[in-house]
Length: 281
Image (cartoon, rainbow, N blue to C red; front, side, top):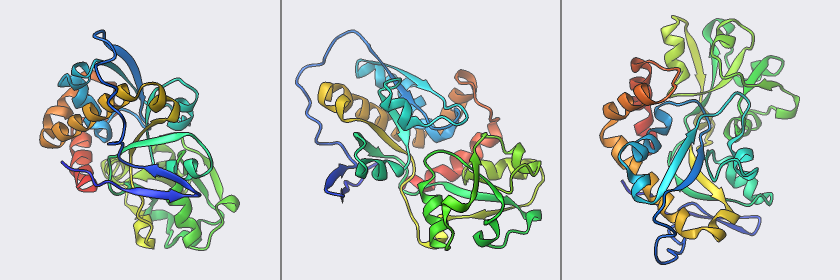
């Protein structure tokens, strides 16, 4: 699987989406496994299949790394976790580009999803025909929802005037009409709606011409400067993991079910895998 190199100038700062430029630093830093943490942006599921594969297949170990994969808790922001030093690496969204332009020292290592899976989900019974109908409704948004905020603006809505509440990561809140709409992944929550037998409606930012990247692997400038070889090896092992996961999705689903505390069953993970792969090309 190949990933295109893309360079962006944002407010005079060059953001490099593929860190092929990271210097190798010569010999391996140590023969002892170096512990590092990767902060995920959601609960354990196929969305992070490549990282599970890199652990399972020993790619991180071969790179001299012992990687701890940490699932997100409700309200957790992976960028804040990495910036605070609680994780060396993280999975974020295209909002990283905006953060970089605002002076945050984040560095994108790889664009994993070529298209964002993020959507806005409502119940069909709410009779929300367009985004304008949400202007006075309660909306549950997760951190780093830049594409949805841009979608609101495209539709003439000021996000600052919307009734946005923190995300609980529970579709049950939508089913129980605690909120009218939630940010969701097209690879995930629609399956839960179908399983509950509830008709739903999906609003996609791409319908408004807003086509952001999806999940991105990132770190900090400090990490790149202090440990360039470690960053290079982590990135390469992660991409090897993704190559393996896309070729062996059923095998990685087994790994997720047996080794990770996932809220999903096999059918849900299979649905996610089927809808994830087209976003990656």
